[in-house]
Length: 179
Image 1 (spheres, rainbow, N blue to C red):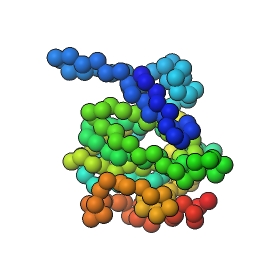
Image 2: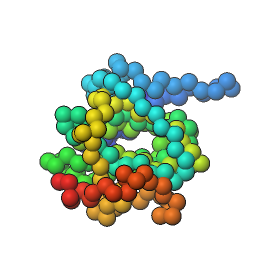
Image 3: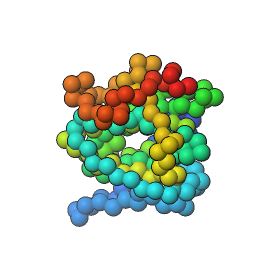
Image 4: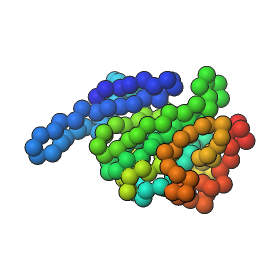
């Protein structure tokens, strides 16, 4: 696997080796040994999967300490714009984000360490999104930031009319109201 450091400390793009032939393809999506050697010592305790239709935007979500979560995210089918926002108060990149297309075609993964809000928007007809977490979901410790916070300048690559949000995500606070 190739690990690519982004402009935001700790946020890593992971490009797994894909072996293709006339039968199809094979790739190793996760190996604890390789991950700990190349990325971080992380014990993932929960795997999640969601299926969403075009225009669905989920986020920007995070878990507060002591239930903060690091995530390894990928798309099995379809294409999403995946976004991670640095919410580490002492970070020089606080409030900055990375937006990257993850798809079943490119098989790219993103490692999101503790201290980030995360969300994605479905750009294809539908998408199957999978992610590993290093901590269990704790509803009392969940937090969220508005997807359209003007201070974040996120281009979700969707028309405003096509965006589908949960009722909960429609009412998330701005970053400046949280920190």
